[in-house]
Length: 277
Image (cartoon, rainbow, N blue to C red):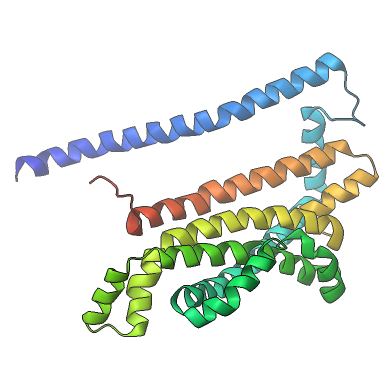
């Protein structure tokens, strides 16, 4: 057995401990601002005696959370919101990436679609709510359409940017080596554009989450946005703040636990960044 083989098992636990310590440290630093904000919230409510009708105390929000759980309504609101984001996001991604590739590789397609995309990009999201409710009614279809619009244009533009950034000599080299169009697409264009595409998906899903809440306030009878709207009618400020906290917490969890790691690993694998080995 070589010296390297003897030392490696001893270094592995140390590396794991370092990684665990770094993870814990990062989590603590992430939690510090929220802890300070919570402390300021408690102090402000107690110091100034703010009534519940104006703004709730953290204890009121906690009680509202437990009450919503007991009633079973909260789980349904969260599920309805997540389901709409998932369906609308998948539809947008599966249509925007092929269009982005076509625009960035075909001058005729680019000449036709580029002006249209510029025009409709500023109308994406909640601007479509009035028409969406007329076309699809109040419910799943209208909200899915809003989410689709919020994600579609961001991912399309990022796909165009990613494919366009691939150097022409790299494409020519693939052609000269005998690659067909499908091989150039799957082995050169898409891998090269993937960091931009994943970044676009992450950004687009953020827009989708905001558009979802706005659409649910108007166009449905279930979801976190609807929960906020309904609580307003009864002056339930504790439920309103609970909904705001859940909206932010769910998005932070999705972004940090799913989207950010995918983006980081994609950039490390196919982008300019490289991990040290």
